[in-house]
Image 1 (spheres, helix red, strand yellow):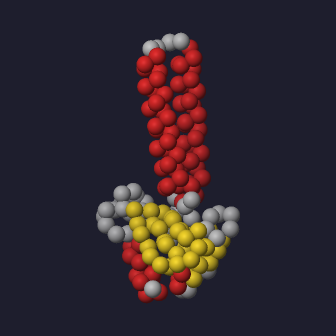
Image 2: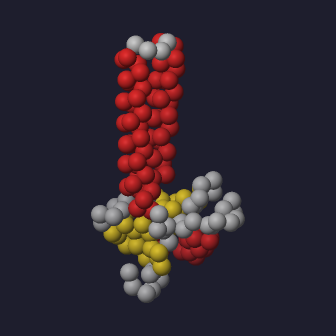
Image 3: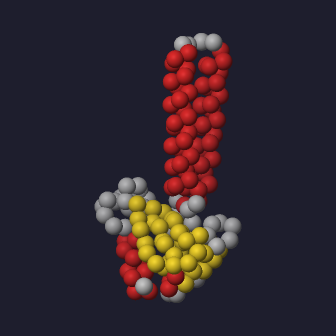
Length: 157
């Protein structure tokens, strides 16, 4: 990155994109083996095992949705004077600032999840999602990165 490039993504992005999903999968496999060993051991009541199994399937569904929504498709985003530099850690593309249509944010998590909506699809689709740096105060207010991108999108628009 040159001196004119500003990193907008959190330094936690690789952790959230790669490590956390692996960790979730590992814990889930261990829990599956534990539940299966109880279920097939003949110990415990059938109703209890069935309830645990249904709860487990529900937690799996919610977990997969959360991983997909908040982790798997995160991008590393930087800003230059004229472009967004977006990476999925395999390839990097440049998107002109004029392609930004709108910017949104999800306030209920910290670090904030920011979504850049594009006018036309890029290699990564019409939406670019990333997590901004962590704030330890005022996390239920608009994130400064969101405000910056919102202002840039409105200027381009």
